[in-house]
Structure formats: C-alpha cells, structure tokens
Length: 254
Image 1 (cartoon, rainbow, N blue to C red):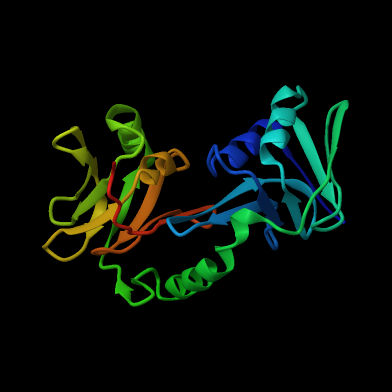
Image 2: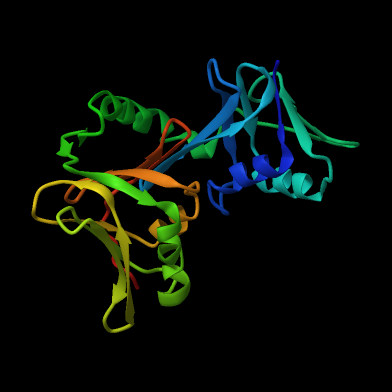
C-alpha cells in the first residue's frame, strides 16, 4: 500500500504546475527523501517537479481524474491531505480533515506515455552534465531569476494563444531574448538577464510553439539553471526539485 501526507495548499500548487489541461498523473516517492515527485512528457516538453510529504509508504499512486481531485482538495479546509492506493488500477483514497473521496483508477496513464523514453535521454544528459541532448551540443548555459520570466508568460494573452515563439541566447551580452508573433499580427519581445552566462560568441536560436509561455508558469521561485544550444532543447532546472525540458519544434501559427 502506497501512501503519503502533504500540505493541502502546497499539493494543489504542485499538481497545477503541470498544466490546466492535464487529466491524469502518476506520483512516485523519492528514495531517501521526504518528497513525492511527478513527471509528464509529450513531444513538445518534459516536466518533473517535487513536493514535500510525510508518512510516506514508498511506491506509486495514480490519479486518473486530476480535475476531480483538484476540485475536492480546493473545497477542503484542513491543512493536510492524505493519499492512499494499493496499486495502479485500484481505488484511490483521499482524505482531508472530515472529508474523504474514493476514486476508481486505471493502469493506463496518458501523461506517462512518453516519459520513460524521455527519461532515458535525460539520464544520459545528466551524466554528461547537460553538455548535450542526444547528439545535439548544449554549448550555452547560465542562470536566470524566474521572476524575470513573468513577462514571457503574458505573451499568449497579449499576442494570441496560437503564437510561434523563438528564443535567442546571447552569451556575450548575458541575456536571452524571447520573441513571439509575426509582424502582420503583432510581435512581443522580452529580454531576460543571464547570470554567469557561458557559450560561444555567436548567439544561438531555438524555435518553440504556443506551449512555451504557459510552461514558464510552472517555474519555481528563485534562480533557475539554463542549458541550451542551436535548434535544440531549452533545459531549465533547480537542484533536483525541478526540471523542465522544452523541445525545439518548428510551429507555424495560424
């Protein structure tokens, strides 16, 4: 039987950082730490985050109806919530104060389909200290304050929700330039200062779609390490507690 207890508000924030449209998720206990982590992966990005927890019985817990779980937790008043499940496919039990909910579950988890393959690639990149992604060199690195990326989150609201987005990394000028939209419909530019920028003198560019601004909303507060290269992934990480990999992909907006 897998179970854990977490602060209700922190757990809600943790679950919502994976995106508003997410329907299911797999939670796993972190070995030798009082934390629970989750990861989701698609052809456009990979996101892994952690949340503090107590009374952990190690294993995995599957949530197949995430919107219903969030609705339940937001309606509770108690500070802590407890999740318990025998295994994937078995009933999920959630209690919070005097309120309880029992939910059926399935062993099929849509958000996990791409995770095993992506995590194999991530393991190799971690072993080489994020100097490459598959065969693509990641020659540019530095750190940014996540607060500086707030304006990037607003790009979709200002320009439109189906925008194309490019990122230029200028190591010599210690800045990243995010640019979204097209001249015929309107464009938005956001400069973000880089701390301890490293890389070749020439800048590098990667292309992403409308998913990039919304992913910036998942970033934790404080300093974030950044690794990237020309026409490849954007890696944003904070210690072992957070990892976001946004995959370069040409996107033509409507």
